[in-house]
Image (cartoon, rainbow, N blue to C red):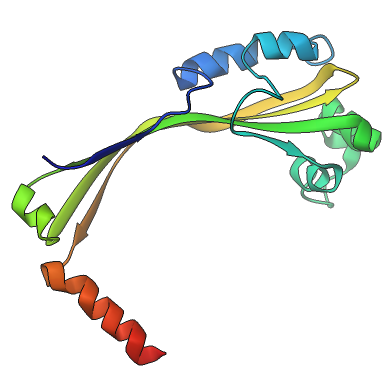
Amino acid sequence: MLPRTASDPRIGFDSFEKAEQALDRVEPYRTTLQELEALGFRVRETANVVRIGYPDSIARLAPNSAVPLDTLDPGIRECIAARDACSLYEFHFGRRDQRRDGNFLLDFFNFKRRTVVTGWRFNALVAIKNNTVVFASHSGEARIDHVEERRNPLGPLQSSGEIAGDLVTR
């Protein structure tokens, strides 16, 4: 009888591992934009894709000016030098499930709420120049699994006290 929520983008991958395996097949300077899209990384059709403009791409690819340019990945250097001729895309895939568990009455009257959060999150950064991938990297969490617990000693009156406190401080 306790609530449950899920966020699952309808476009993307079924798991962190599948997304990682697909991106591992990308070879800089060999994989074309069409091949990248065939692997599931569609820059125009996929939800949760961010196209990063040139000024922001500098901050993403070379965030520390103290690091010499020649020490960066060749694809990153080439993308920075190409300016607007290089497109940088950030892909976000994942799934997140939240399930409240515990004592129904304590939860219902807002004394104690325990939420179990599970899922995964995958982020990929891909640079494309002249319809060819010049750089690809990924990050994320292969397994999300944690518990959020909130205790309100005043139960249903707890939020009333917070609202009254906000009114007094205004």
